[in-house]
Image 1: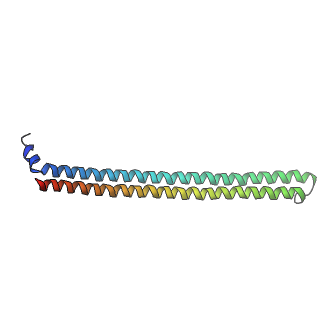
Image 2 (image 1 turned 60 degrees about the vertical axis):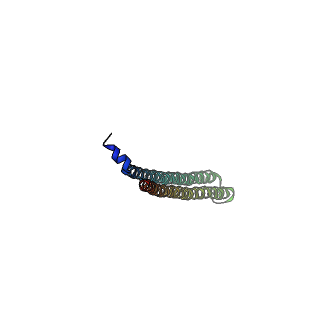
Image 3 (image 1 turned 90 degrees about the vertical axis):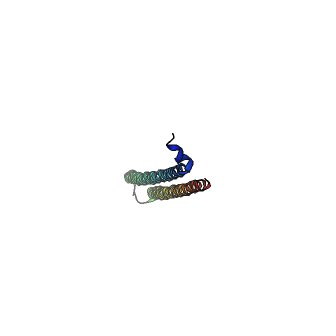
Amino acid sequence: MAVLAPLVTSGGFQLAMAGVSAAGSIAAGNAQRRQYEEQARQAELRGRSEALAYKQKGVDALRNLNQTLAAIIARSAVGADPTSGSAATLQKFATGEGVREFNVAADNAVMALGQASTQAGIYKQAGQAAQLSSYVGAAGTLGQGAYRYGQL
């Protein structure tokens, strides 16, 4: 203990502790930034996954449309011309609905990607702010240590 007494009373200990604290603040800020960057990557992955699910819904809508059109044509071919009358009307309606479903799914896919990109940007900004805040905190800690050292 007697060996540490000159160090503690000379203020060198306070300066050293301020340096350690400042380094810890910077390390914590960097870790927080990495955490936010990982959240940004996860948001982008989630968005791509949602977009793929919406695209699959669009593909399913077109597949259902093909099945519906095939059924209309097959049933109408038994009794009359499959390209006229009520069969043609049913085909037009089914085509309109199928295309509408496909377009809605495509729009949803685009919106999912856009939302994911926005969320990722928010996380990245939060990470940069956390890192900057750690630098400011570290500078403040070092300044306080230097001020206290000057007071001794």
